[in-house]
Amino acid sequence: MGEDDISMKDDEAFARDRDEFERLLGDEPRRPPRRAMIAVAVAAVVVIGGGIALAVGLTGGGVSAAPGRVGSSASPGAGEPSSDASPGGTATGETPDGSAATPGTDSAEPDDPSTPAPDARETLPPADLAAPVTVDGGPTVSVRRIESVTGEAVLPGEVSGPAVRVTVEVKNGSTKPIDLTTAAVTLFAGSSDLQASPVTKPAGRAFPSEVAPGKTAEGAFVFELPEGQRADVRIEVDLSVSDPLIAFEGDID
Image 1 (cartoon, one colour):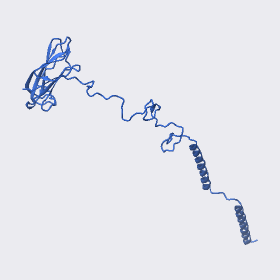
Image 2 (cartoon, rainbow, N blue to C red):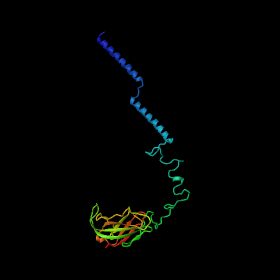
Image 3 (tube, rainbow, N blue to C red):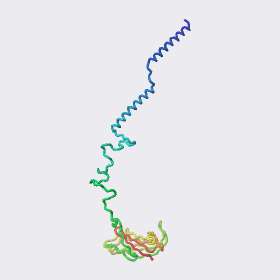
Image 4 (cartoon, rainbow, N blue to C red):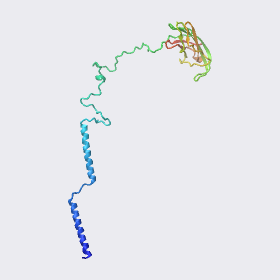
């Protein structure tokens, strides 16, 4: 047997084997691609999860229909109390006893405009610059002297120039010492009704800390006051918060 005969037989055997292999492949059912199988599995999971979520929503599982509001409903359900009810169980516009309330009215009586405020300081009627003022059961206050001086600025805000020095006398006509530690004297210019600024020099003199019964105490106070503003001035003496304000008015020569 020659080499050509052997080669021909090998070709025939290979062809038979190939035909048998293709027949076997044609008879066996082909499996779907792996990617297709994965897609089907994912779709099944999504369908199952959606059904569970729908079931939870239908059973009122606390999920709100409004976006961003978890655990509360968009509107109160049937049988639930409304949030519009007024405190105490009464409806809006009704009083607790069931009577209708009139809008814009108040049961409180309006304040009497003639009644002074409880913390308002009492001010005695102004007296002439030369007249003393006596407080009932207390001291007698008077303006003893008003001198024209030249003020000298020492502290920030002070202005050098024409000024006046006012000496005030306090006579204790009571049976108890009078505390003068918080006593103050203020001057207002008549033409502008502005408070005159105090001046450090020439030096004034503060009140003593107290004045004994039957005794007299003095204090001198210097204020910046141009000569053109010395008509109809007002001097106020404030001895303490428990005493009324004492005022003097008049022209300074």
